[in-house]
Length: 316
Image (spheres, rainbow, N blue to C red):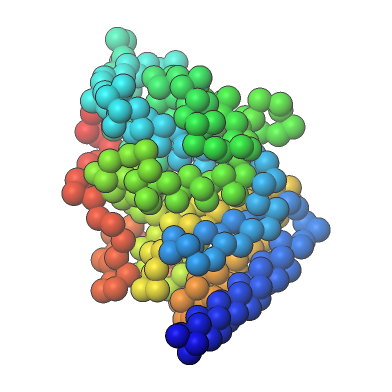
């Protein structure tokens, strides 16, 4: 009994020392005069958490699309929203920026898309037009109620376009801690059916923008993430599935004049967390490779697979 107690104590002390080392390293990385940095890490095994400026509210950009998606699926699983509902898309709905709907012809009477398909476009292609249609269909008050109900304290979604930038007062806000918490709830199917959670995670894994967290992990690692990008704003939040377990990582930056510096910082933070979590060192040559959305998952690195393939954007 005494031996077991000592072994457990030594394990706890070793884990605490390792976490303290990671916390210190993250604090050093975040201590830049270039801009504001917010980091939150949650181990899904429950053995560690780390945060730097975790509760700092920063412009959300497109990472706000994650709670919008989660709100819609939460309503659907409660029988309060039909994801097969048809939503009318008109020429006047088109927005600039990411996505394909801005290039599609709505026609004189508009085109109809299912809410399910619009959410898919919102995540996989970060489609701003699809996002506006989803937000308007679900309703900002309903999304706000969901956000408050799950305890996201710094998250504010009041702009359905996701394009309003600071210093405008009506830009969407969130924090790294809020986004990490949302990801944990998603992974653990809290508020969703298993099928819904798998679908949302699969869409995030399939999304096209892979300049952030993806660049800090070993090739073949399953990452389900969502990036955000506005002028002076670069964010990335995601679930990382490794051989050693799964963790949620949220990284937010604001005020960087050089976008490449913010991107490199996000890559470095992701690498430091991955190496600390897995004990696996990433060499520079591996980081330079841009993973393909069509790449096959490697054995031991696969995440939760959706039973439903993601259709092409032309499906309505």
